[in-house]
Structures are given as structure tokens and as C-alpha cells.
Length: 483
Image (cartoon, rainbow, N blue to C red; front, side):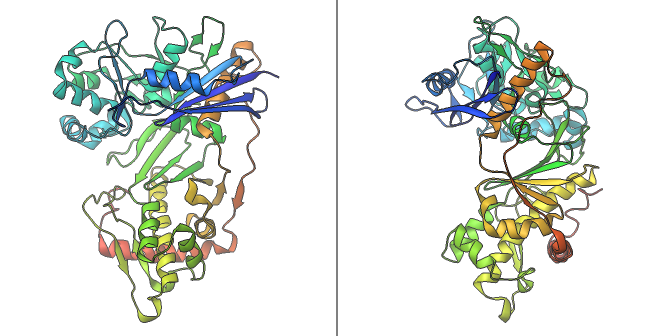
């Protein structure tokens, strides 16, 4: 039995899991928050804080006996370094959205969403490094001129653990979120980076999935690492056709697919994964915020809203909620508002409004999944993630609406587990005990399986009711997405 570690450096802290390299059994764990300096903004940070946090998380011998380490890092962060490897300013984090104008400008400069979808599979968003580089060039030109190399958070951490060697590396999963690397071609678009920053810089070498980044001075193997979304997919043990629906305030839907997906509307973001496959992704602006808003209106909490909803019936007595409370991204209706229709005397009860909120939220996520289906992406299972996935009403309603087997995995540090699994993969490939084309088959945690069964027809009727209202309220909004 060997030991491997997965380190997830998130926006708030560092989590370490140490696993049996053969089975994936978690043997030890550690966690520590990122220390923040006075006045440090949540949108940027001195990356040395990540190393301090890692050191604290590893206290007490957490990493003792470990043979290999994998790193998961927050996607879309940007570390701009000078020729000597020194950061020219604090790292810009995923949640930094100051580059909205720059993202829009870059989109237009390449002929609109279709140009970017063809080039790199993704339209620039404020969070993407390509947009951050344009912001840097415009707002901090002196710092921008010093930039000689660009890394992502996980790249920088790997480089630090290896002792800052001349060679810098990344992986295809994290690289696919930069805005200047194409998952379809597997190559950088350095012309797009120059379009953003104004000059060329050194970029990290993109490693194959099982290829190690190197060894520490002490001989510890470090795998390629990846972004946190890709690490979580690896930690969950997803297979082609597995979809993940992440229930946060907003919602994210992605599916493991065998080829890159190009969407000229820009609705689908064509990420790569950490195994050689792809993770086409669609986002919606309104998920759990829909439930929280309805709970506030009814003077209850999420648990109370769930209990109320389960006393109603499918279709909510004709009440339909379009959950576009903060505008919507899928479909592209940024300035719209939510809609509640079907008000009749018999439907004007708290339990029917509660259920309409759950059905509206989930139908919005089904819409996102259907966008992927129209691009040829097959869906066999739907994994529900997030605290809201544990709500009884979500688990009761979701299988029929998704029309597929729903999997609710137990809470776990899946990004760190995925990083550890990648470390075991690299270690096995180097030692000749694991094929390079497939990660080790670790045991997965016992999940709750929810089959739509006889409720599939009921779910289809609810979806039709929802779509009729959506089309009547926003005619043609989905036509371009389904073309």
C-alpha cells in the first residue's frame, strides 16, 4: 500500500487528503484557511499566503510517508510574473470581476462569441485570465510591461513545491479556462494572449494527464495538477455521460464528453477535463437563490420550504415560476425578471408556491442540460452537488424532471480527492503499475441513487407546462441555443 496526497487550494483555504494509492481510502486529512493581510481584498491575494496555509494544513505529520502529491487550484486565477519569476502584483482571483468591460471588448475584437468559440471554445468572461490580462494592460500598464510569464494558481503551487525549476507546467483542464488555450486543438493561441496583454509572454508546458510535473528536491513525485472543477470530476469518478448539476446561488451543469464542443452562441464553455476527455459546461444565474427568495417571501427557511413543497402535487396546481430573478444567462436574458403565472384561487397557497419554486429552479437547470444535449452530448446519470441537493423536495422532484438516474453523493472533499487520484495515477504510470490512458479505479463513496421510474411521464408533463410559459413569456429565447 502506497500513500498519495491531494491538496486543494480554494479561494478560502487549503485542504489536504492523504489516500491509499490502490483503493482511494482516506487515511488522514488537514485543513487551514488562507491568512489575509490587513487591507487584502477577497479578489486578490499575495500567493505566499497559499504556501503558509498549506504548511499549516500539513502540520501534525499529515504528509508523512506520502510518495506523490497532486494539486487542485481555483480556476481562472492569474499570477503575472516578471522575468525573474517574481509576481508583479498580487494574484487576481476567480471572483475578481473587474474585467467585465475588457471581456466584452475582447469578444467584439474577435468578431463576437462565434469567433472565440471557434478559437478556444469559450467566450471571454470577466473571471477569465485573458480578460484579466487586458484589464492589467489598461489599468496597471507599468506592471503589465514587466510581465514575462503567466501562471494559474495550481501551476504556481506546483512550481513552488518543485523548488522553482526553469520548467513551468500546467494541465489541459486548467489551461482550458484561460481564454488562450483550445481544448479542441490542444494548443495555445498566443495571438489571443498578445491581443489582451499587448506582448508575448512565457506560458507553462501543458502536460499529458498522467505525466508528472517533476520531483521535489527530496524525491517526492508531483503530478500535473488541475483546476478545481476538473479535480472534483476526477474525485467523483465520473464517466462519459455523467452530468454534474451544482446547486449554488447560481447553477452550473457540465458533462463528461468524448470530444470538444463548440457553441457559436457562447452559451456552452468547452473545457477539457483532467483525463483526456472534455467537460462542456453551461451556467445559469438562478438556482438556490430562487429557493431562498421564495422562502423569505413565505417567512420560512429552505428546510421549511422543502416541507411545504412536498405537500403540493406535481405541476403546483398550475403555478409556474420562471426563476430569472437576477436576469438569466441560459437563455441570454440579462435584464429580465422572474415570472409567476397560473394564479387561481385554488393555487394561491403557500405549498403550491413552494413547489413552483423547486420545479422552476430544476426546470431551469434541465434547460441548461438540454442545451448540451442539442450539441450531441449524451447524459446517462445526473450527479447533484451542493447543500441544497440534500433537501427532500429536491430529491423527490429532480429525478422525474431530469428524466435520468440522479446520484446524490455524500459530502466530501472531491477536489482534493481528485488531486490525490491524479497523484496515484502519475505514480503508477511512472512505476509501470498503472496504464497512462486511464486513472486508477478507486472505490467511490456510497451515494444515494434516485430513479425516476414511473414518475418520468409526470416529469415530462411538468417540463412541458414550464416550457409553454417560458416560450410565451420570452418567445424565441431558446431558438438560437437549440439550432
